[in-house]
Length: 411
View 1 (spheres, one colour):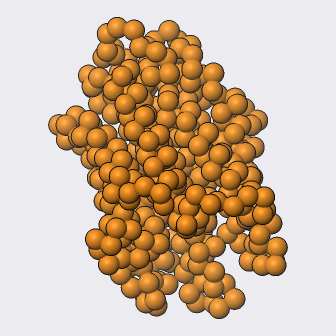
View 2 (spheres, rainbow, N blue to C red):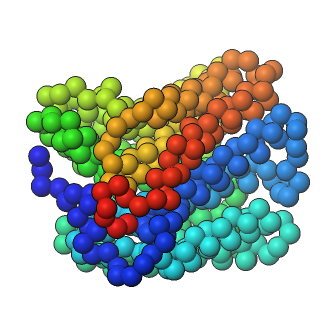
């Protein structure tokens, strides 16, 4: 096995004094609140499509839905992830716990409330609360990341900065500071989040798979080839920028195919071990993140070539519901196992939840196009379907997030 830092070694640098369990580590509050918030949002979205309610608090319900999926839900996941990753990976780095962590949680909640009320309060206030949150988080982790001689989290830090820049562009468009289409900025942001996923997968896959191999007494080593991921990140970035600057250019077709091909190339790492691992617990979920992303860009390319497939925004659901949704799910279930002192043991619900996410992406991204007259029902149904895995996560694992580690360590 490679000499990776173990998931528990950073607890030797834990702050002194009593800390409430809910605030004992960065993932605890954010990984409990994020899936709850996602379920609430998707149930509202489903009820709206079913004609049961109207979203009167917002003048643009589609932008509300997309923004809260990207910058509302994902910001909580990002913060919980990086506040856990920095002390877990970097030696002697103190985790942010207790009152400082509580302040971040409250800022996130204020940001969510302010965006819901954006039509009634100053957009400047909404922008300030949301942009400042990620800026504060970046300021808390930038020093240990930049002083790491191995530069292990440089790419993750860069993606955090890029995400916040894209969020600032969105509010600059809403405030008419820049002559931009706010909806196009959100589409641009989807590409930025795909790049973030590639960085995160590259970062955590080695640790997760080798941890799983070790606990199952498998004498094998998994590794990723970083150049493949770097090419995929570059290809996604080029497509994202090109679509933002020239959304009607036919070159986008081939850039989408290039993104698809480069993402598929990263899958070869899963077949480089002597042990067959693709179908193993947890690992197939990670594999599916990349498959969904490749399908998304592949279908986007096809939609530009074949008129009958011209439904670009539907195909983008493979990126959001499929890839981003599965990334949420993997990070939640893996972190809540390893960082509460437990082994990676997949129960039936974890696997079933992953299948529900795949099914929701297929229904929303492809099947709805086959029966457009029933699209309203599909949108309502897939919203509930997509929310179920996260509801299951909250029901099954909320106690793990609210109780001490089973191995007696802090955090």
